[in-house]
Image (cartoon, rainbow, N blue to C red; front, top):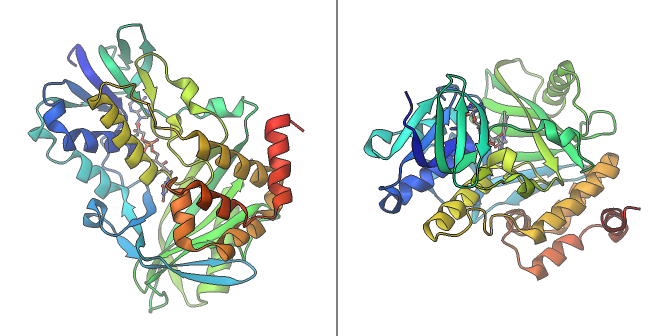
Length: 384
Ligand SMILES: Cc1cc2nc3c(=O)[nH]c(=O)nc-3n(C[C@H](O)[C@H](O)[C@H](O)COP(=O)(O)OP(=O)(O)OC[C@H]3O[C@@H](n4cnc5c(N)ncnc54)[C@H](O)[C@@H]3O)c2cc1C
């Protein structure tokens, strides 16, 4: 039997829900008199994904990171190696993130973990009603909801590309990999004329994640990812024998859809469903951490929870970039090469982290051939 009323309910103990929980625990002095619930239909014990991201220096994530890298590579017509300092690229296995966020929950008496499936959420003027599969019902003042809700994107006129990928964890019998360097984008092997690349994260000298990724409107057959991973390994890594001991697969939206329109009264969408994935890259881990921190700060200051969570300036730049990617998907490799060859990796990360100045934005945008973006502006603004 769930209690009847909560001040704050978080639906989903995945990435965004747990980033919210971590922030609440950090500010527990403020929240200790509130009644809070985090709900998930699953027990969160599965190691269902690996999150990778960059950030400056050391942080709490180093405690649970599987591996960090100080250098990165980009390959297309030419190859580029970058020293990431002061940034580091990091990888975390989901199971350690879930464990980290949910640990010691019993030390926070105001926070309840509910294992149940939410069937629907009804925002009303003064409270939000949450209905469960178990036929129970609870009410709350603020509901932060991360249930997946992507079907709606298929039926809008917005640009909707999918970042879809399959990753294979491979193990060789001898030392093969340079463990200092993460290969962020390798366009040397492509699928037809679509935006497609391989991503390689060496975990040890013998073990790596090799992922084949596309940014495209439609998904491809499962066997095509496998075939590309196999060809890539033989051509660009090693012809020596290896085995695949695990795979992971995903589809991440890259869209111009304005997710802010879906917040209603006290019901707020978070995570992928709330547009917390960076539209032009598909990266969500650090975005979710920052946005969760902002929401919690807003609650502490009695502001609208979503105040300042979305940046119009970066939304416009993401829209232009997605427009170019969508209309000239076959030219994506050249586009990324312009970006990586004309800017330092530090400038690129700062820009993608939405922390750059307007002058720095202009420097990044002027590394692309202007005609592509002028056409994108005309399409976006004038519909031509
Ligand atoms: C395989 C994979 C790899 C990825 N790698 C990266 C990466 O390297 N870097 C990066 O930045 N991003 C990555 N992403 C993208 C993004 O970070 C993840 O998709 C992220 O988990 C999204 O967070 P979320 O909170 O929206 O959803 P989730 O983490 O999926 O959380 C949603 C939660 O809601 C629960 N739930 C769903 N429906 C209900 C219901 N009806 N009732 C109760 N609970 C419910 C689910 O059980 C789940 O726990 C990856 C995605 C995938 C799939």
